Length: 113
Ligand code: HEM
Image 1 (cartoon, rainbow, N blue to C red):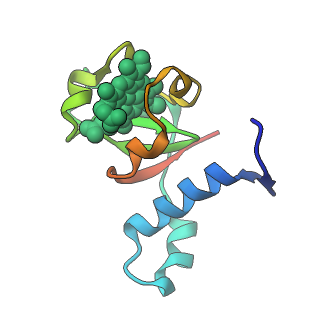
Image 2: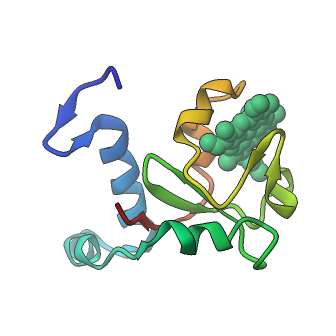
């Protein structure tokens, strides 16, 4: 990835992490606490939220998991030629849009390495 890297995170990943934390933080003072409390899910837990096996539909991007259940564009887990329940970071380059499409969705956890 051709971008500045801070420690273990690239700029994009750091932005996503901050979004994830602020989604559940009610004030700056809870940010730190939430940072250590972020939920981790395994690939198989993510795979179950593919729009077929469970009601929830999740998509991961740069290791952060988003809940896209309410999206009409991800019904049954399918979005054009793409399927939910996995990390679609590499596929975003095929999309006619940028990562900003994730802005309106809640980041609900991170993908376990
Ligand atoms: C052939 C590839 C793709 C096509 C043609 C496509 C097309 C679209 C279109 C037309 C929209 C709605 C307009 C917009 O917000 O710009 C959209 C929204 C979105 N796309 Fe894609 N997309 C593709 C791939 C992807 C991939 C790989 C991801 C995930 C990494 C993704 C995630 C999303 C999300 C989260 C939304 C927002 C849905 C909503 O607002 O309900 N898309 N896409």
